[in-house]
Structure formats: structure tokens, C-alpha cells
Length: 361
View 1: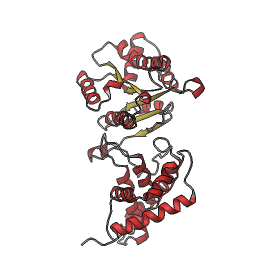
View 2 (view 1 turned 45 degrees about the vertical axis):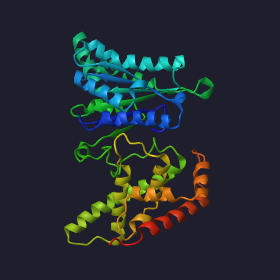
View 3 (view 1 turned 180 degrees about the horizontal axis):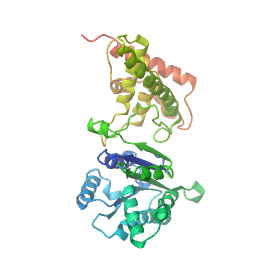
View 4 (view 1 turned 90 degrees about the vertical axis):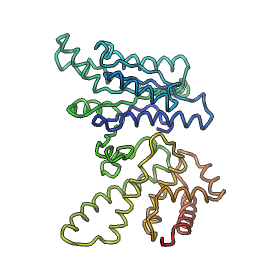
């Protein structure tokens, strides 16, 4: 979420899949970025709404916010599972109103509200409906979730340029109807994979699945978006080839070299998207990594396996000053010119082959 506000984004997964950690990572990246840019005035403010959680879990979240240096910019609205139902019901609306008051009073230009989580809030709503003997059909309107999401906004510069972003968390086991209802009222969503969490893959998103979305944050930069289109094509092609290769191996056939190259490129894509938790990635390094994957043959045709990030580090450290200047001067909302792409490709190809072109002993 690099400066891409006014989103309503949903993280849905089984309990323990890393939704909270990923959300806190997004907040931490915002704090790190604005501190790095010495732009305290543009620092967003956060509201963290914790609904229906155990008091110990709320304490853990508070401790993480403090450790990641997010707490000074955060207001926590907590209604744990020991609080009255009405307090748990009102917590998301209170959090949203706090964020709106910041925008109205000029405290910040960008506010982010985290709702953790709305599936627990839905259970609270169902209990209240049962208590007051309302029909179950009233759940959707009584929950107020659609109204909460609609309060996310982005004003024009003439009206202050303020924005309110919503990050929604929801547990899915046994609550598929709740998840589908939330998906219908958000801008985009991602499903975390508990199997990847068990394998310590972070974030726990199956980026090799053919249905994986590559739209939206942080791919709003024009040049990066162009590279992601190529990576998207690699993901789709690799999925089909992986199925065909698996079937062919069952009949004793060997893998064709061109198919193996695509499979190797899938490994690089997976490696590119795996991150260290709470580690800030340089935006230019991400762009160079995407450029390398868009031209994956630069890495897959080497005599040895090379990590995409090792290649990025080498290219960054040896990039000529004139190319650095041309890349820095490129507007974010414009794609690269053919001349710039050709010159960068030529340098990347030469630099990678010079460094990694010799077979390992």
C-alpha cells in the first residue's frame, strides 16, 4: 500500500493464517516510508478496531504496535469478548468516526481504519438480533458493514485532498456466507493460505495460482504495472505447463527444456513475492526485480541458479549514473519509453551475465 489510499481491502483466511501480522506490516511500511522521506506532515494516522478478541490477544496487538513504532500514530478501539455485546457492536462505528474527525479537524490528510475482525462483529450482530427478536434477514442492514465501507473516501485537492482507507479482516471457517457478503462490498480482497503459513511463507498468498490478482497496490506505478502484465502471463502459462508436466511424468516422459525454463521462472516469481515480515523493501529494487522477471530468460538461461534478489542487488550496485538519473526522472504515471527499456535491458543482461555467467565450481 504505497501511497494508494481510499481503498476498501479485505483479508480473509482461517484463524492463524497471518491476517493481523500482514495488516500490521502494511501500517509499519507506511510509518517507515514517511520517516525515511522525513515527511512527518504527511504521516497517516491509524485506528485499530479490535472486536470480540480475548483480552490477551488485544494485549499482544498493543505490544506489536509498540514494537513496530506504530502506536504513536494509532488509536486503538478495543471491545474484547468480555465486554457487553452493545460495546462490541458499536466499536467499528466508533473507530470510523474517530478517523473522520481527524480528517475534519486537519489532524491528518490520510486516515486508515483496521477492522479486526468483521466476522466476529457479525456474530455479535446475530446475537443482538436474537435478543431483540428481529428476523434473521435483518442481519445485513443491522450490521452496518456496507455503510462503514461506503464511508471510505478520497476528496479532491480543492476539497482538502483527504482520504479514509479501510482494511478489513475476516475469519472464514464456517463463515463463508459472511466472507462472501464482505467481498461484495469491498474494492478488492485477498485470501491467505494457511498451508503456506505452516511452511513459513510470508505473506501467505499463493501468487502462482492462475486467479491471483495483480491489480491495485502496490502496482499502481505505470512501469511496474507493465512488468506485472508479463509476470501475470508467466503465472498463467506456468500453471498450465506444471499440470502438463506432472501428467507427462506419470507416463515416463522427460520435461522439455522450454517447459523447464517456464517452471524455473515460476520459482523466481514465488521468490520475488516472498518477503521478510516488517522489512522495508526499496521501491526501486521492487521495480528492477519485476523488470528482471518480465525478462526472466536473463536468469533462467544462466549456467547456475541465481536468486532474483541477488541479481537485483548486483544490478542496483552497478547501475550507471546516467541510467539512474533517467529512471529517477521518469514520471510515476507514465510507462517507460522504448529507448529506456532497451538501454536498461542491455545493461541488465550484460551485468547479470558478467557476474553470474560462469558455472559454479
